[in-house]
Length: 220
Ligand SMILES: N[C@@H](CCC(=O)N[C@@H](CS)C(=O)NCC(=O)O)C(=O)O
Image 1: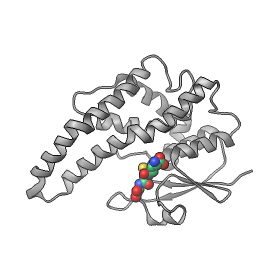
Image 2: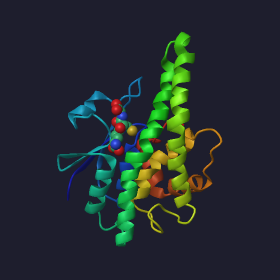
Image 3: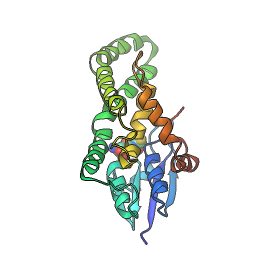
């Protein structure tokens, strides 16, 4: 049997991998790392992978990074659990695995960085910085977040899970962005289907176990 070590960073996307390990029932060891006061990862993570980010998983000593690639690898290692059932489901799983980090996360991260920048700049220039970043958010960041979240909201109006009728790795991969998206949604936006979906996946025993072991994926 392969030895799996998850290098888990508190308050991060690596909760997704912990959750997948629990869903799949694979044996693993977990090493937990802290964030510093600037919310950056413990530099010790660079000893595992050059980028020093989490999640990173070692499988028999081989370091695997990028959540979606890790999830695909772990699903292949499992007993068939979470494997797509049809070619169409496989295509959908692949689509959402890429969409999560390729499309949904970048504008959410931009919004988060802008909010943090406004809080951190010296008080005297804060109105100027706020004005500039507010213009960028108004013209680009917020419309993109609304477009992406609206697309997911629409998808979940006709099906319980992102790839269709079955819970898959796509749901695990999309969870973090949707939890963040609901929190960072521009004023006036509401996402009832996404909210119900989040409640559905957060009720899964494996999700609860992952949070019990590794903590919540993001600050409340
Ligand atoms: N696209 C990567 C993102 C990895 C990533 O950025 N992880 C964050 C945690 S959510 C991290 O390690 N941040 C700490 C840092 O950059 O210092 C993935 O999905 O695995």
